Length: 330
Image 1 (cartoon, one colour):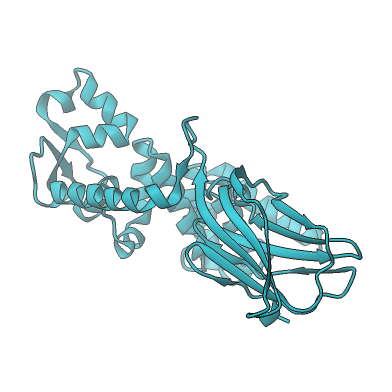
Image 2: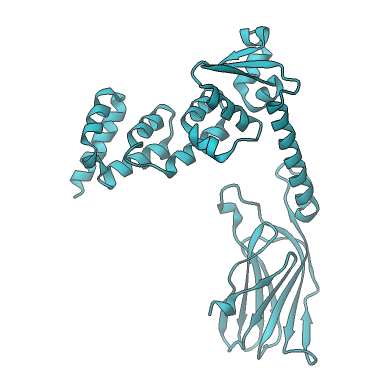
């Protein structure tokens, strides 16, 4: 069943081999990847028509996913095998926005025996969020990727090789040089510092005394697009503090997502306090669920007692309410 639903796909071509389709039968393919989207084919037969449908996965529901494709393609139905192969060709679709209902081709004949549905994509475009002309992914994707990679590499070199730096950042245990224009572009707080007659503008220094030099390096590496995964994991809490302090919502959300992924008995209380301090509702909910729903609160009595004596009163009340709700729901 799975093999019969598989679509063979190349960069711009897809073929689905369908066995004999009884009357009043519907079949749907497995997903296949072309361009930025997962695609599906389906076929349905009645006593008058054979209907072929092509549609892309609804990417709008996926976080940061691409918008619906604007597609140009040719569809063919290849019936039987060479040398007696019969080919039915659709006139062609050009620059069609494929919304969730997709493209449907109703063929006024009942196809019997085995056949192949072939889709040849001539172009795939995505809408310009700013309202400009749609851009072809094949014309722009490779160039954009190359440009992005070159730009990020150049930014990283500017930081690590101290190229024309003009600002000194003083961390708790050392200092590092950076570029005020790049800091200002990434953070409205830095931009305000360097745009007004403040101490940072006059002395060309920024004091971040609550951050170690290692964490400061990680913070700058993120700003310059060169942060490594292991460096991020080692400095998540410091990066979260910096993201909140310097109003960098993207970094704050990245830390939030990461802290949700590895809650355990060794860190849950610390993360609960962190979630309350930095207003991270999903992290708070994840920690409370770990403690209450999974009953880890009973395994951590000593740690919990210490936490209750020092934690914020409102947070302590939330923990108590969660435990009481769990008890009453037994």
